Length: 214
Image (cartoon, one colour):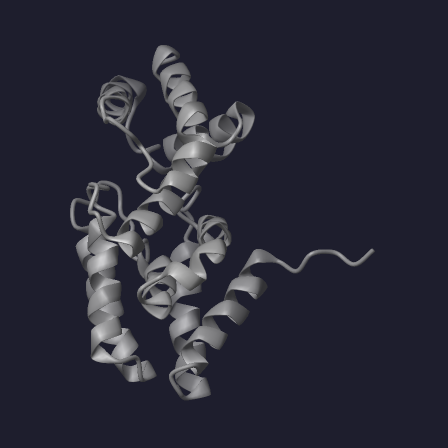
């Protein structure tokens, strides 16, 4: 039985196909992908990495026919965490700016570039928008919260802690408690009916369990 191809290879293929839809030069496509891969494969990327992108793209695939701008939505996935620093109050803004610099050179229409940048900026606060593309992107970004507890604990909570390893527990834990409390205070974590039905209950159980363990 053949092995599944590495995540990087799958994502490289997906990005190249997406860029080719706009007639981009192959060398430029390759350069843009190398830049993205280098960012997401950085030494400190324990959660915000290529595996996260692959998971998001898989979550979004069933919604292609309903997307207002399917290309913009997929480009937003690829670029939304391209800049990720700890601490990083401007990560989303800088990631959006990077997309705005790179995508026009790939031949992406201005409207799609603008849409992509707006979607990326929306990932900073994860606020309900009433816009399908925005809501489904944000739901896909948070889908890990609704995974079974062992997956959540190992591949999300523990990975986030490693990304914030610069902070000792006495600094990290109060900040993390504030984040978890804020999430649990929301009327709903997932905005689209599909994600809500699939993940909301488990996500709240996971967040509550992590919070109790801090």
